[in-house]
Image 1 (cartoon, rainbow, N blue to C red):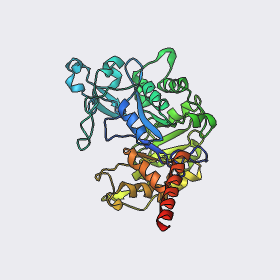
Image 2 (cartoon, rainbow, N blue to C red; image 1 turned 30 degrees about the vertical axis):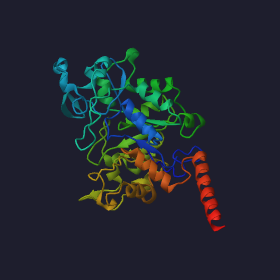
Image 3 (spheres, rainbow, N blue to C red; image 1 turned 60 degrees about the vertical axis):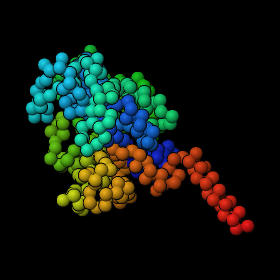
Image 4 (tube, rainbow, N blue to C red; image 1 turned 90 degrees about the vertical axis):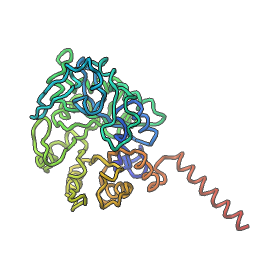
Length: 367
């Protein structure tokens, strides 16, 4: 996942900042499956990220799109042909197979595929959709502390079409699930450090609503300058203004903007950075931009097709507090190379052992 100006350790539990956090999507493989979550942890992710939607029967699932068309084998299931629907989503009519029209049992009968044709296709059809509780269990079952970074996805749409008992909302179900597994505590509190979590959403009203339900840290996601907020229809310029930052800082610990909104690009070259990071920090808001990707098609020419140059730029020059990446292993390696002690006492001890070994060899050769 992230490199949240946590530069001393991958996940620094001793400082007021979590420098070098790695937030991971691993979108180079089919999204949000059990295998991908475990793979991200193996590659060094400090946090694993997932989008949360709901099934027809009100079960929270890990899935990115409202529709199943682009990333599952739904087209091969003839028995579901009649399920195709057209719904209005954020003012636009979208046609497809929506998760909210399928029960969890039906969703689990599908298999997940890779969206992008230029990425690895060998895992297509091998994994099923998992639920939010599965995702949490994977993080809690890791051999080290691994945080979670779930997104409340399209809450307006979900609340329109899925109903839970006793008048509860999508957001209530979401927070109840986190509480069930012991997630609580303000940012960097003792409880939070045991089970770290950030809650993210593009919908500010959802974040404000859940601020009354949990004290876990929240991140307001911000799309590009042409996209209004999902729920309040506010413009990019409104929600990145000083007055809005002054308002939203009481509910969130930071923002998660699309990285090209921080530093615009033209003809694939980065232009002059905006003051978004500086102004955010002035209001004590962290900045966790998305998303770094290793493929040349996504790397600006400034980085000479080298993802490590991009990490260095965002972390050291722009001074962001975190980075989302689709390639956890590369950011993890960057952190190790630029912060030799970032992996904690065990790795520091190993490094000292190597130094002692090299010195002893030198002395033996000299003698």
